[in-house]
Amino acid sequence: MPSQSILLIGASGWVGPYFSAEFLAQKDKFARIAILSDASKISKFEKEAASGIEIVVGSYLEPESFKGFTTVISILGNVPMKLQPRIIDACIVGGVTHFYPSEYGSDISHPLALKQRYFRDKHITRRHLEKVAKEHDTFGYTYIMNGGFAEFAAHPAFGFVKEERKLEFWGETNRVQPFAGVRDVAKYVVATTLTIHEPGTVLTQQERQFKIPTTAYTWDEIVAIISRLEGVEYKIERHPNEEAYAQMAKYAKEGNDEMELAWDLKAFLGDPNADPVPKPWDTDKFPEIVPEDLEVSLKRYLDATK
Image (cartoon, rainbow, N blue to C red):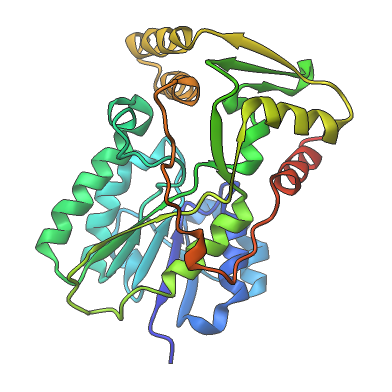
């Protein structure tokens, strides 16, 4: 009998349906697969419920919500991400033995990332995980680092302005950026959960890291691909990287967290010292997964935004 019970939190966003679909595809390998939902958001999960995923109504700050689950996977967005230390505490009281923080993106142990405001809440979560792991020798956690979601290469957060057919970029566009499509990220997450020790095992290694970018392109190459897919030439509007940091500082001074984070991301993407996910990568540990091409991921996103 499968021993792992999986609970997804933060699944009402864009990433959630992909994770749900991949866990459902391997449903027989898990004792339970569920989504934690606030009572006001249950209607968002009608499709998942109809497909066989259990919907648990509760709060991710309450231990009762986590009872009966061994592994919690967080896919919370930038704003609620700061609550993860409290969520982790509630998980442990509720009996959870493994936690995946919302770490999707860069390797934040990189020296430059240690200084970035954009990653501050992730660093706080990491320190908290290290602390509670020392107190609970059967508790483990996994970091997933995929670079950027390939679909987001054409997202406004990365500087694309679709209406004006351009990429605004604060730095050198010949920098290589690693990516993985959201479907592939979900597949790798499911695959890594299947390698977790049996619940209750005393762990000699409580932290696991998986670097899973599937491809890497320069921003010049990405713009050329999008131009071809759209049948319209996109232009590149380049700005000094320092301007993005200046905008970040401006919004920080104003207390605008959302805009501060947005500009910090743009600054990091164009910073010449950034290395989002240093090699070696871990995709070869899962040869059964055949990653999709960047163009496929981008086309899915572009078609959805028409």
